[in-house]
Length: 416
Image 1 (cartoon, rainbow, N blue to C red):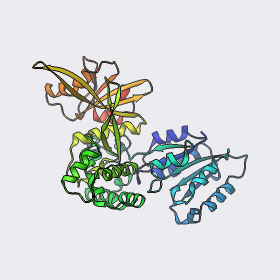
Image 2 (cartoon, helix red, strand yellow):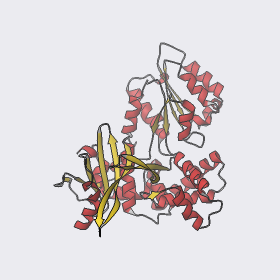
Image 3 (cartoon, rainbow, N blue to C red):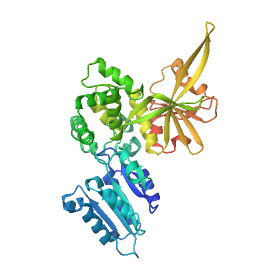
Image 4 (cartoon, one colour):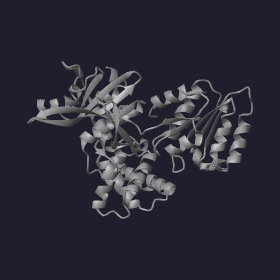
């Protein structure tokens, strides 16, 4: 069993908070296992009577009668009718029940019931949570396995990191011993699961164009992009039916399906968010690489994406940043924007993080540190380097240097 302690902690802290706990995330990332195995085992270990835990898997044929909302509602009322007892209701794939919203809202009025559900397919994506429950639902976003969750499976940690950067963290990937099996599985997930979900939900007309947008996003992880830029790229290749509105809509569908996340840019000196240009990160490195037929294994981009996934898995707020500087060149005032890969806000703390694949010389080091040196505040600055032999240290400017391995595997890496 691969432990998912950070998610289990969030579930346990949310017990009996008066809200429906809604576990979301890309399909096949381990939501059902988290709820029905890990959380269930936690409840049993805490002394909860198994008769007080009502588990329903709506994708299981044996529960097919409860796809009818009235039958599901009546069943749950019958199972939780003893007001002297407390009950936990765990429902997997809730969206398969037509009219499930009324069932769940009804449970909110039962003071002796704590409700947990999972949902992932085309009828239960991120925006539905906002519209259907209107503040009465508590979303727990589950990501594919991050490196810190799988590295213990390997004897050789460097090999583990190399594999993670290529094949990502979809849980079932670890059932395959051969590279070909892993690659075929990831490719089939895209073609047979994710695209079908998006197509069914939004009545997609141009599947090939949807696929091309995913490929462009995959190729440009960690780079600035937007709908207009992608539209221009696709139009130049004469994509059928492609225009700005279509591309913009398709990008929203891709994000709603948890395949990519869009990250805003923040002007550190100007203290404001910048519109139009964003960065997009893949929710799983293996899926990203599969969409490019494993031909674009640029470790610098994959490393940056891996850092992003570790940060959001920890529940942190992440932006990408810019620092504007001015230089006088030949009596001309020239403005230049320096990038900060990540700005992380945690309570009253802030961290600036740069991702550096290799630093072969002093010039490259100065290039990586340039943005840090132009930030006037005293928040912590961290340079994450791919060097597996790097021992963590603070330089004379107070900047923390650490290896990617340590950053990903130490849950306290921001505060070392």
